[in-house]
Length: 251
Length: 285
Ligand SMILES: Nc1ncnc2c1ncn2[C@@H]1O[C@H](COP(=O)(O)OP(=O)(O)O)[C@@H](O)[C@H]1O
Ligand SMILES: [Mg+2]
Image 1 (cartoon, each protein chain N blue to C red):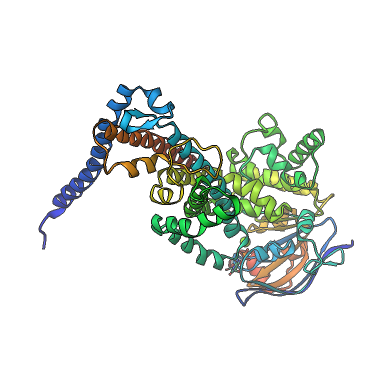
Image 2: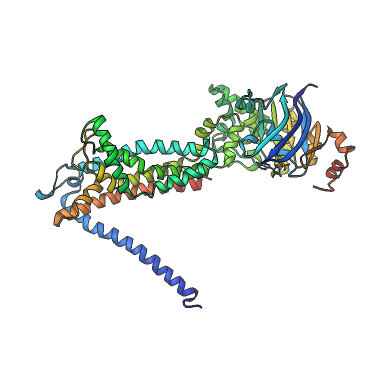
């Protein structure tokens, strides 16, 4: 399979201190790449480097190469706004925008200039269906997104990304605060979505990576310790640290 | 050394609070007591809606002053509100945080410059410019609007900044992550979420503009008439009281208190609008 994203010797510094150490990996077209590792190991930093969310923060510096479809993401010619439309992200804390469910879903596409009401309606139904939320909210699309439960809010955040029809979807511990049923719904959604999208799933739950990821990478203190087919990483890891982590001996 | 004990401290604090509040209440009652009977005797609509203010003949119509106050305040808002809100947006969303750290306290300091100084600048700098380039006496409605517009800037900017900063960061992040530009994020998400606080800042600025006296007396010219152009000399409600109180007696004196009652009611209404807006912002989250 072709590579969607290529990362070569990519390092990140926060306030001149290094938190990602020369990471190299590829993300294949239409795969789910799982990223696991203890908290503080740089998973979020890595993920938010890919759609350039980190640079909204002060003290961010990077080195090395990060490219999508062969185009350097950090090149001065890259249109960041366009990039973020192609690479959607779902954050750990679900925060809908302070507007209705409907408006949340169409927010991004409206900005891209789509105004046709019928088209927007279709898009809302399709995105909410893909995010496994449609049946729960179809009769109350006009209530504020902030009034949904945590699990529903997270699926709404996924739906608003899907509405953009991005090429890549980044998920940062999307189920960390959710109950098992909401978690299962999100995992089901992801399994269906990978036929259309390339997905990177950071998760604090190793079992989740084992369930849904095609390949899995293990981060530890800013290093990519190991990456490979999920089954292989979980059954016969090459590195001792990986083994310790997935068997729960630390982290 | 325990002179008072816990209970003693409590009593003293209560007494202090009580006397402060009763002093304010007494003043309010005094104004109402002096002004209200006059309003009813003279007739509410005669007092508010006739244009003759000739105390020597017993004519006390404050309509010109009401109109002047309204125009001066509206003009000040038209200058101060857009500038103030735009300044707040620039400082919070576009300027580097370090710039904001320096400029915000500086702007708040502007609020503590005595109004006589603003008035002085108005008389020495602004009025001559208006006289030269636009005509008229210079000391005018326009001069009043500009000076007041500047004077309310600190109120508008600083309260707007606070309410914009109170909007959760995650809203901005969510919007930017969906491919919105900074400006789209600002006006579609941040300003909407901060709206009630921004409204409150404008209403509080309005209250400040209506109540301002010294600077207005100095720059607005003070003739009693319904302004027909921005270059006319005007007298506001506050100016009317301040200018005539030193020699007013009898009916005249009561008429000035009655003017105070009108101002008092307007300010109460504005402040309750502002505090409702602020409360709405708090319950919103
Ligand atoms: N905006 C930031 N400014 C400074 N340091 C940061 C910032 N974001 C993350 N870090 C630091 O980077 C390290 C890795 O954090 P993070 O990427 O959030 O790890 P993880 O997601 O694996 O828990 C942490 O030590 C954190 O303190
Ligand atoms: Mg994280």
